[in-house]
Amino acid sequence: EVQLVESGGGLVHTGGSLRLSCAASGIIFNDYAIGWFRQAPGKEREGVSYISSRDGSTIYADSVKGRFTISSDKSKNTWYLQMNNLEPEDTAVYYCAVNLRGWGPWVQSAYGYDYWGQGTQVTVSS
Image (cartoon, rainbow, N blue to C red; front, side, top):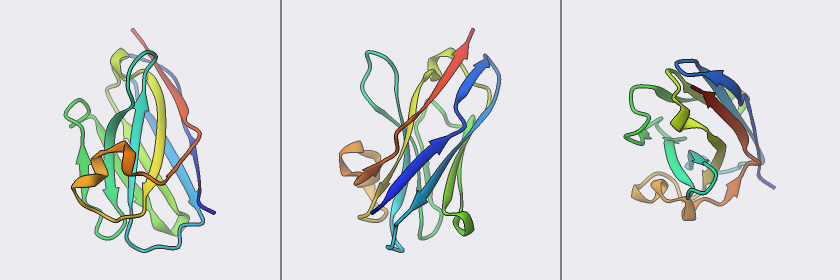
């Protein structure tokens, strides 16, 4: 069974940085996508960034371009979201998820993801 566990959330001031980790187990496919999503209170879940397991292709939401970086360490089955220059608007619960259909236009939709982590809270104070 696939399991995803996020860590690294916390409380930071505006302009601060955090690195989220997503440790995966049970993924037996070679071609899949990892996505980072976030959900703030009273708002819909929003896609933040995505990465292909096959060739490392990445996509970023406009709201985080230039501030967030998604990466992977396949030797550890772990994916990361480096978040710099954080803003209060980044406050949310952050989730990682895996899409077992591989890389394509569908990776930006949360509905296509098969497994989700439990989430980690990120709070940015002004």
